[in-house]
Amino acid sequence: MSQIPKHFHSLKDHFLMATPALSSGFFAKSLTYICEHNTQGAMGIVINQPSNIPFAKIFEQLDLNTSHCTPDQIALAGGPVQVEHGFLLHDQEGQWESTVQTGSHTWLTTSKDILVAIANGHDTGQTLLALGYAGWSAGQLEDELAANAWLTVAADAEILFETPYEKRLHAAGLRLGIDIRLMSNTAGHS
Image 1 (cartoon, rainbow, N blue to C red):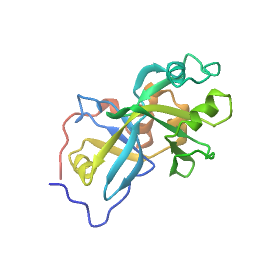
Image 2 (image 1 turned 180 degrees about the vertical axis):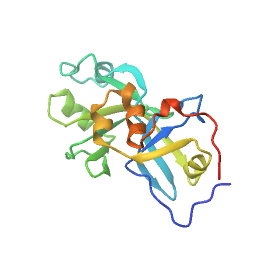
Image 3 (image 1 turned 45 degrees about the vertical axis):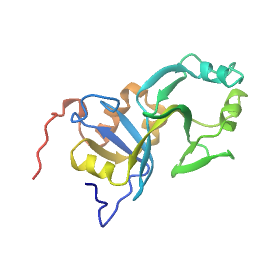
Image 4 (image 1 turned 180 degrees about the horizontal axis):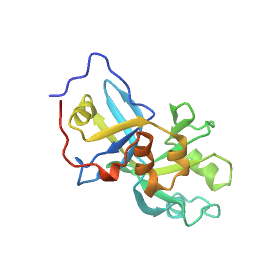
């Protein structure tokens, strides 16, 4: 049974690194950026799993200009919830219809207007487009942390926007001083 700790600590603007305890399923070897975390639950975007869907295909489906899309722009599989919806993480605020600030220099936008701006060649800063998100109900993330499913570290814009997706989990582990690839799938409690 989930219990919210008396002294709740939000993990908003942090990375969740899947430990070997999550050895199968969607979250195996995942790195998730936490966009919101409060006593009601948490929401994040997995930032290291490509969906193999190019931006150009998404833009075509939305009847947007694809001339500014490059072949290396691939949407991420952001999580198992609402996979038909796009979530755009970016490092410039802008004036978008549906945006929330997730960190000191990071925003999450879910409205089409930012995609229109990208399609028209406007500078929206560094961006990550994900399809779907990861969600946790009240106390669920805390239970998973207690079960050693995740490690946490403060988010870093370089890892989020500049590090190739396949190197992000390793880079986040190095911020904690560990090589997550060498971790055992068993953990002890003292």
